[in-house]
Length: 481
Image 1 (cartoon, helix red, strand yellow):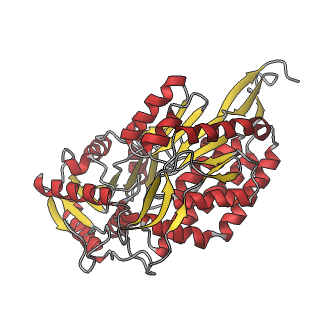
Image 2 (spheres, one colour; image 1 turned 30 degrees about the vertical axis):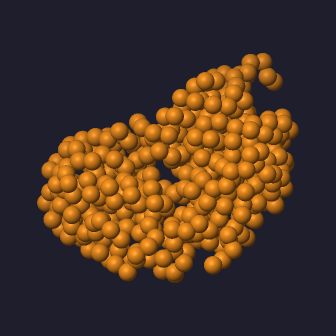
Image 3 (tube, one colour; image 1 turned 135 degrees about the vertical axis):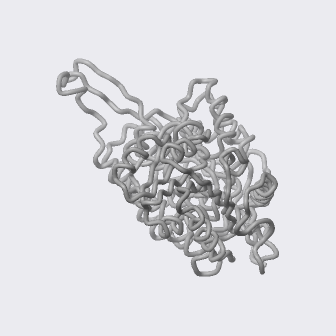
């Protein structure tokens, strides 16, 4: 057995320091169900230290020119690219993404986000006239201050870069708490930041769980802002804690994203793409198109195609090369997904692919079968709750109005997907969907597009100009020459 990795220190004020109270926590490799690393769970004392360091660094960091901050971003990107294989292997080990996906998608997305923020910061004007009518009044954009950042395990570098990079671009200083389930990639990210020579205290990392470190950050009287990505339940707790001192709160929460497939679309490609997208990352994406809404005339065909996609989706070990999906991240997630598949069967949805238990030939590891339910109605648990596994629910509709009604009948509003060959319909439908992102006919959005949700999918937007502005205060000034 390989050596257990010990990564028990926190990164505070430019150095790796021991936790104030040792509290070991094992990080599990989901493909073996065995620990491969040990971290520490921090306490309020560790958070206080990190926040103090961030405070100390704030005056000089926020006074740096845009040009100086850009130089640091470019350095971070350069080192990140150099160490991308190491990053991919780390992510693969901690959350189970297959090798190829871990490199091109999980690690690649972080690279794209850093590069996009370099462009955004280059173009951003921190001082501008109020308007053409009132040019003598000025608008100044200034860093909000010290920010607590809490990130999840499902897309570790996506979320870390979406928060850390705009925050430091804005001139803020930060304390990051990555998910304790997949923390090793963030420890590597801290190494990258350290190698880039970012001034001490601008970026700090404290590992821990939600109850310990997460709560200490949310409630912290010296933090100006908290940015959280995770479940809606936890986001509500963060908001309650943040209310104590009126912190700004940015939240990116759950989703139950609809994929509306009309008969006038390129049906076969639309179904194949939609089902594959639902199963990608083993279904562990907050914007996964997990509800497939299909026009009645193509419904039977859609069920048949989606069933075949599920049956042809390979599940295998993360270390193997190829286009398969890996395990779910943890035992808790495995039990949750199994429970929801069982609920789908009990509530009378028609199971057409997958189902309970592990795929054939995999007797350990948190692997699940790519699963498709047909004849789902939108009141069933599997249509209401975010499953966070490779489970697709197919729901028939008769009219465009009904499709929109079903699509919007959810507490969430993160993403929505529309497949149609009729431009007028696309224009009508996209305007009616209550979601922060609408992706049409399989076209992806660029890295600088804003990402975030309506309703219980969150508050604020991440990425691009909007993501930078999330970390800025607006000051109106009169009498400036």
